[in-house]
Image (cartoon, rainbow, N blue to C red; front, side, top):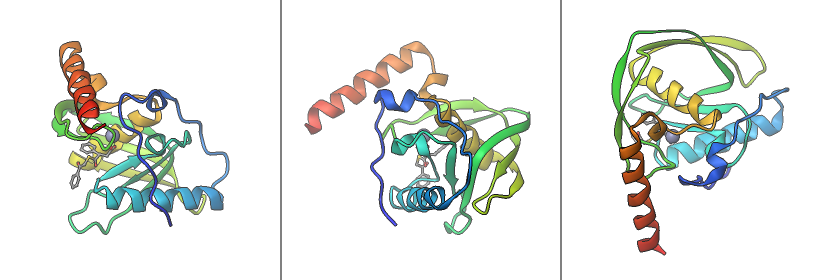
Length: 167
Ligand code: K1U
Ligand code: ZN
């Protein structure tokens, strides 16, 4: 397995749309394993392939307390959503930035699995937030896109200052 570099906002590659996986083969299984290792090491509770500059519809998530419930989503689609919740989100592509985002409280997702099968996931609370956040990444969207223009400008300024200071 390998640790993969994570793209940082505002890298334009974070805006690319991921294409569906046609066949779940060894290369996809290796990508998912490397993404899981990268997510656990970061540490994070989710990671989309877009964030490691691979533009395929692959996501890993583990929101469990003891990091024992790894989910791998391939070509996921939300088939039902309802309710509303507000959660203070973070993102490994925007280190140090946290803000409240409103999303569905419950989602039902149909996804392909690593063995090429299909399964349904019923998610509420943090898992539902994380699935929606990661599926946004596959569409080239980051969580700050849900914030006001004023907040987005402040975040850009702050990240550019951070980048200058660490150069
Ligand atoms: O997509 C990402 O960059 C991962 C992101 C997922 C996420 C977090 C919060 C709300 C929605 C989606 C993260 O994992 S940020 C890091 C984080 O939240 C965390 C890290 C360690 C322990 C617990 C949480
Ligand atoms: Zn993110």
